[in-house]
Structure formats: C-alpha cells, structure tokens
Image (cartoon, rainbow, N blue to C red):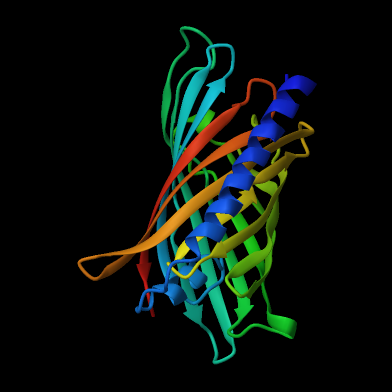
Length: 277
C-alpha cells in the first residue's frame, strides 16, 4: 500500500528530476545548431502521428515489486508506420508488443518470461496541422490476447477508441494521447477488461537536437478500481551511425501511485530506428 509519506517522497524526487530536466534543456540550448536534417527528425519523433516510420525498442526496468522486492524487465517493441490515404489524410498504425521477464513478487515463486498482450492503434490524422497548429488523430485501438503465459496477459480481446491531440511550437511539443478498451471475447475464466490509458506529455528539443521529455503513462483499471501512475523523465539525442539516423534515450520514473505490491521506481533505455520518408 502506498503511504502518504512514500507518496510525498516520490513527488519530491519527481519534482527534483523535473527541475534538472528543465535546467538541462536551457543550458544545452546555448550550443550552435548542427547543419543537417536531424532537427526535423527530432521534431517528428515527438509527434505520435508524424509522417515518419520509426521502430522504438523501449527497455524498462521496474523495482521493488511485492514482498520479495522483485524486478520486472519489459521490452516494448513499438513500430509506428504511416500510410498516405489521400493528399490531406494519413493513417498511422502504432503497435506495442511487450516482451516481459518478471521475477516472482513473493519469495520462492516462479519467474515468468514471454510475450504479453499486443496493443495496436490506428490513427486517422490530417496531413497538415489544423487550427492554430494543433495536430489531431482519431481511431480505434485493439488489444490482442497474444500473451505466451497467462500471468503476462489478460486473456481477452478488447476494443475501443483512441485519440491524440498535440501542438508543436518553437521547439516545444505538448499534448495528450489516450485510449479506452473494453473486452468483447476471450477466455471465460479471466476478468473482463475495462481500462483507460492517459498519456499527457511535454517535451523541448534544443538546437543540438536533444529532446527533454516529461510524461505520465497512467492506467485506470475500472474492474479493480486501481490507478497506476508513473511519472517519466527522458533525455534523447538524434545521432547517425554510418549515415543511418537513430534516437538514443535514457530516463527514469517514479510511481506516484500503483496497485498494492506494484513497483516504486524504474528506469528506461530507448533506442529508436528512424526511416525518413
């Protein structure tokens, strides 16, 4: 159970991390710009519905899970592929395939490894920003019961709406991505899926194409009335390896709240392969 003392401690740590991120963004922006196309790539990378093919490999480590203070490793493979339907309208597919290694949260329990449930989102988005530069994407999200181990998935097909709304101006990107899915088929002996995902985000990209990102990846489980609210801070940099653009990122997160036995904190390593169109 998350006590008031622990919650205050986590929020204090999160506030300190936010301050460091903001100071780093301000200081690093004093460096002269590089003369290449990395600026446009860095900007597009902060836009979930940009006309850019990207394949992020997002490694996450979470700690202090359950009485055994177990560790969970989660690799999210997240290809984002846009399609031009017309001159004015794009379809962006965003797939999240989790690969999990979960230590037992109790002493002496089994460790579980494998693929989790895949979430795929489809966004219809105008090819150009709309009113006052706002970018919008709307569509369905589908959860597949693809887990290779019952403990790593929910065993249900689920479907619902997803949306993203954001604006980019003077190096800043801010907005929100959200979805809600309800189960409609699957294993009869598993609990129904009824969950909301909310990801408000903000980032600043300086003239050296370094991005400083803050977001939450909050989930509310309506079936069990549980919030999971991690606050993430990430720094990423566009680099080129033999002429191929990559984005490398490193960050940390603190859980403002989580279900009983949930993690306290974690960190993230992100490698994103970019394929400009």
